[in-house]
Length: 544
Image (cartoon, rainbow, N blue to C red):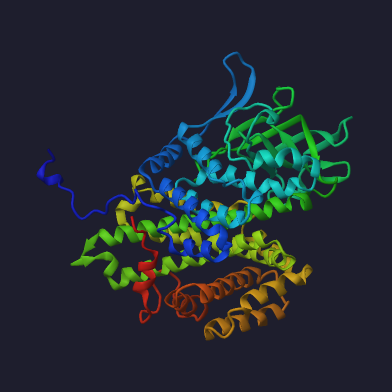
């Protein structure tokens, strides 16, 4: 029996036992908007099942356990033999297996696959973001491998399989495989052309021996890796299998696992290649062009992952404030708290709406949509991933001291929040990539302007923002120093145009007034008070 001094009152119940997909109105509407009607019922049933799984107490516990028990490197066995294996907590394998079986690596092989997979990725990331890394890279390896039809025929069916097989054995003996990636080296970082890993041709055509070091190699327990190395003809893309066809281990020496700020359930490593066997992917000297399809796909996953983290942070904050009472009423009904919650909810919905629009462009596959993606993906990656950390901080603060405690789960979201802004090229890399698209690919800007132009005339603030953006684009003086400002405006105008077209009027009105009309402060909770903020908050409330 609890002591009278320990009676617990005025606390929100845990946000568990609910459907993460159907509780997210913005996500559900995006799926309905972008999928062929013939696919919609099946997709909603799949996503709702995944949403119930994600929101279950059991899966939430798996996520917590995987985070609390990070992977461990076993460089040698008990006899002193080098094995270079990574041990994971069982919860990690359960999460990863469920992600694979839910189709989060099979977007390329089914109708509407990118929209369905993107929605699933947003849902599943809310269980534990760490397992998103191998899911993302396995998914994204497909376009790079298609540069070599023979390799694609061999590997793509395994990559897109719904079977998770964690054992290290030749890929030909597995029903499903995972892929990692190794591009970054100490001396180069994002400047991958500074890579010094050497690729020496072997007697068999298309095979090489690699020697060098990768400063960041993600998911080292994977079955294969796409890496960059300097071949005689220049920087080239290679496929490095973890286990060779005869069953022997390829030379893949894991020097250490990174001790990271967040993403702790996932293994990131430094690896050494020393005569490591590899297959060339694409032509010599065209490594960046070959792997760029993988990079673009993982950049979209950065946007999706940040949208997922924001959604979970906002859901937790609104859920807490719905139950918590202070100063004579529920927190969610207090005008100032409502302003804060509505501001975060706007950020979350704008991120989700933009991310799903990009996924739909992948499914479309037309030349115009590909041109649109060339500009929109790096702009979205720059802006959405940068908004994630401020949202996580503010959401944590909504829970007060309870949010600062590990058991709330909010510190895990906060530690995870900067990752997607750094991974696959930090902010400056994305901004410069947008400039390259503007300067070298005029079709990209044309496609972008056609997209935002579909909302012209619907809101005077959006129209003004488009006009101002065109003025900025016409002025090339000091363009590199202005790149971040320009890319921010590109992303905000695109988000505004999508919300004006697709979101409820109350949501679009508040977004345009604050993000495009200038009626906004420098922190969350500074929205114009005269607008319908209660509707914005209620729309974002997760119904358990």
